[in-house]
Amino acid sequence: MSKTDVVDAKIKGFEPSRRLTSFHIRGFQHWDGALVFGDIKVGDSLDLVAETDNPYDPQAVAVYFKGTKLGYVPASENELFSTMFYFGHADAFEARVMQIDPEADTWNQVRMGIYVTDAR
Figure (cartoon, rainbow, N blue to C red):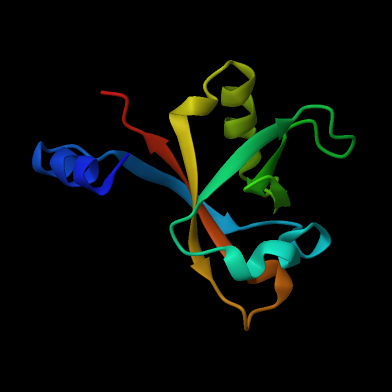
């Protein structure tokens, strides 16, 4: 959605998306986030991919930035998204970078939000 679409949507009285939750990406320090950390900016889109074959958590949802795996949606947050993805509703959500803190511990450097998109 372009900036013009967002402004038009707000003028018409509805939001193009609404934040459902936000959190720091889990496992960021264990995956490839360091390789793309300098390229990530607030507002960037992130991709969510259900990992139903994950041996540690069958409801795991991985987080990617331009094909690079950054980590996971925390287990405390992943059940809804895993279920919705399983039933084919992945397009109802979007994920974006909300905050970047290069001075924080590696597991708290990137905060993301998951939004439900307005399909009206």
